[in-house]
Image (cartoon, rainbow, N blue to C red; front, side, top):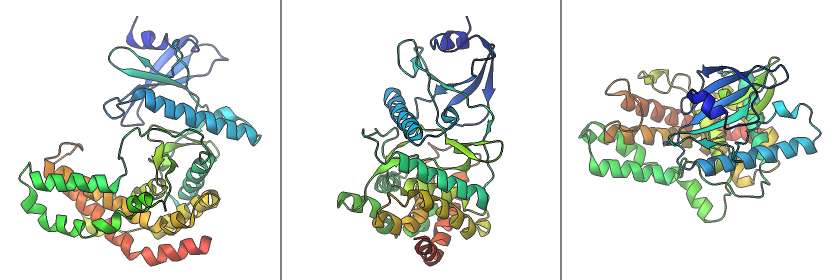
Length: 360
């Protein structure tokens, strides 16, 4: 019995397996399409969970079960049709859990959603749909009765990321600090402003929500007509500020070049993409957003390139121990790129505030 046969036997729902083929999408988990032989049986998605990244798999899967079951109930209450294509369903193992540990790796199986496609293109049209869907995703989970655990602790905690940078500066493990001292000084100049979310949370003025924390076009499924079916890749769904979903999407989508482009003259902020995403997001999220959250949405757009610049710079000073690099200055180029985007976003702040006010 090969590895796949052994794993798939642990999930009794699956019928006769005809083929197991790797899927290229996704860079964290290993993903396979499982085709079944019976005409009436669905196909499935098999994943090996990266438990180096997600160290508490039972917590991870418990989060996902709570989220998908809650969304399914909401869709049923709304009288939606074709619900099995609008929310993921994970298959229980013979032991009753939605994962199986083979002694070395954790595996899970979900039902494949037929006639669905992913998109990668960032356009005003797709950005509007992404904003609308992720706002709806948060809205449906606003009354989730159980608090989720953090699948990656401090993932979007700006204070934590700055502590990591300061530790790297103090250690100067790779002897690179002298190269980037002025860049470190520039970034740290705005540290207090960029940590305002954590301060407001401690003061009781800013809530945490259930957020996806990895908002991008490719993390939702579309039907063949271009309509959004459902949000996928739920591993990072956990308590966070709404800024995680709002700002993280725009960090990549509204940058006019790729995040590691060494030519920072190509880096600018695409206001059109911002407006399309903000319009969709606020349409579906305004029912639960507090005035504080809404007012700080432009801050969220600045926060995420700033946070990413801090993370890339930390890794560069440490000697490239976290991110994969293709050449010695790769993380430094990434840092300069993201810091330039942060500066461009700050220039766009008045226009962003004016546009959001117009939506309200």
